[in-house]
Image 1 (cartoon, rainbow, N blue to C red):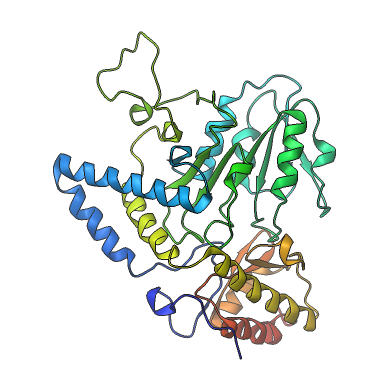
Image 2 (image 1 turned 60 degrees about the vertical axis):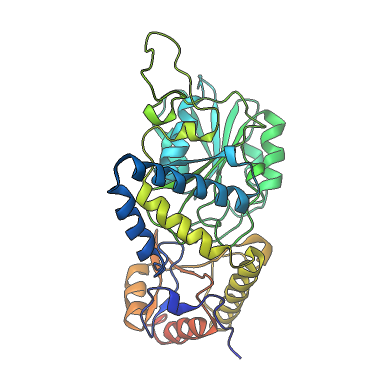
Length: 371
């Protein structure tokens, strides 16, 4: 029998007859978020009392993320996006001639671009698929190793424990993007010095806010080089002639008002996800990716996603010279996949089931060799 969805599809805005397999790009909205947005609209209209209600949602979101990621409440803050968060970290480092940062050649732009335009910093990129491919690029002048826990391009899952040891061997900072993992994989945020995650994918939230993690135990003296009213320790009249004090925890990442509406949605999403053991979600997603990879092999369609479940996340990716045409043709057959950089990406969450894999395989059998 086909694997049944773990989540109730009726709780999501998923059209009937559609295999919604693009969680790595955008997940469907939970219907419960309608009430969350209405609560925000109501609270926003209540003056100062309403602002207190909004800040209470910030606190609740921090508590839920901290519990999910296995870290302290004070280690969690919020930024506008992963790129904003990585930029805060990059800007805080005193880059000097000869310093370098190390990435995979196919790393996501939000992890690399914040440093790409900075003077003095040399960018080094590892190619290939070897598990330890970054190790050969790291030396005593490496200041930062940037990595996505799960690759947006291939679905490969990084070995964060090995990268932690590699970073420690030269005193580099390990900066991790958990966007393609948080929501269906257990997250060991404490392996990173800094970590970030967008909220509109597997976390089932919305754009406008991203999670920021500061490992205060490992980097207790860290401070950003820019601030805003929200990140100051005092919201009274600052003494701009003196030394401005920042809040003591990870909310120093949040320079201005966080995106409150998005945080109402995030709380709603996290409360929904906590009904399920994350390892049960992982097992479910893993079963779907394993099934699809096996059946792609039967069709003699090559995937760039590792076959070993321990080395992949929820993405199954196929390189194709006409990827957009393929994605368009799949959509006509009721399969909503994702394109980008010449590959087709199928990504699963708890609302997917074996019927979605069946629809993918049937559609590919019809069109893959014809386009």
